[in-house]
Length: 457
Ligand code: ADQ
Image 1 (cartoon, protein in one colour):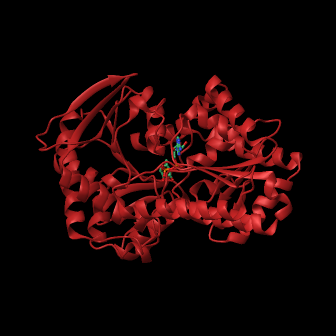
Image 2 (tube, rainbow, N blue to C red):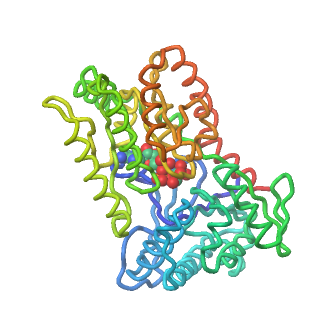
Image 3 (cartoon, rainbow, N blue to C red):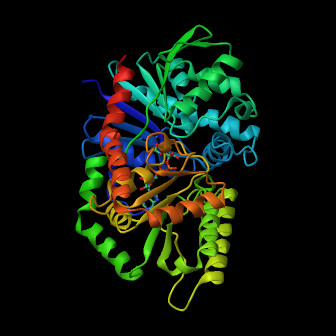
């Protein structure tokens, strides 16, 4: 069996099962994938160093070797806060209004990717499979090739790939995409993001793409395919039965009495559509005065990327908006929104999902969205809740029996809440059953096998 070398911006394998903080979807998915594979996970420690001198920190936990490096302040600012989170993240989530194009960000991004390549190349042995993750590391495969690495190298993008007409607003876009032609496999979350990539290759670089996804471009060949990521189904369903889950479940039930809980769980990010969700919920409260006190919205949103100003701004806007809605509608014994800015351990989260009659998941654009799948996995089969899901989340292509809504429409959100509250048990069960089968069958292990098999060639 080949060893797997995973490379991503951050490494958080050892903590992934128990940390109470905001866990990125990537950390949760990869810790599961690496546990069985004698793998090495390489990336940034998350720490800052005065001066980077090529020092590697190597640790072993749970069958996974992690190797990390520290980064200098300027690298963190230009590569991570800059190009990754102020340029690529907004652009790839269709927000060119928020994307910032600074030369220093682009050069910092290339510099840090070179630094990653220099540090990772010596760890790679001849039979290893190399799997690079996400938008922070797009050019890394080529930089490893430049250092003589001949192994099979795959790249998986966790976020959307934007339509060509938006993508070409990125200075040096051809240069970035050309680096991707050195991979053996490029994976996207859904067919939709794949189609945008293929369109770019054909229209901007004059390449051709076969029906099986083989891309021919500028003398190179690479397989491009969709590999929808799933949840660690076994781990998550086990967590649902834990004492911690039961305690969280009972606490939420007891504190909301006979009210139906609507739950939202997101990293605090403008792409998650939490503002639009609050507006849709407000519309529901306005339109349905007789049902107001039957519901409560629990929104869990731990802050992320606090060094980036757009994240500080969305945080402030949400505080103001939740305060406004609560001020306008609250009664002595009821507030419409419980807005919580912290992360929860996964087991507690499982209990909260199970205690909630409705999940309100309304991203404006999302590569996949694992919260939607976790909500489905956590339900009681005898009395399952209803998933209201944005049609712009990658997960909507698999979870077709959710109530799919356009998150930009307050009316659609309000109407879906009313429909969910009125939904008969038989319909809830029918919709949940089909979503449950998908979440169970297309889980993170299935995803990993699918990608690694393609990478083996
Ligand atoms: P994220 O944007 O981080 O991931 P998501 O897929 O929803 O989004 O994953 C979030 C993970 O963090 C989930 O496992 C969730 O349980 C956890 N989480 C969120 N809020 C939490 C809280 N308050 N407390 C504890 N845990 C919390 C990126 C892409 C997604 C893609 C994933 C995986 O943006 O589209 O699905 O990677 O590929």
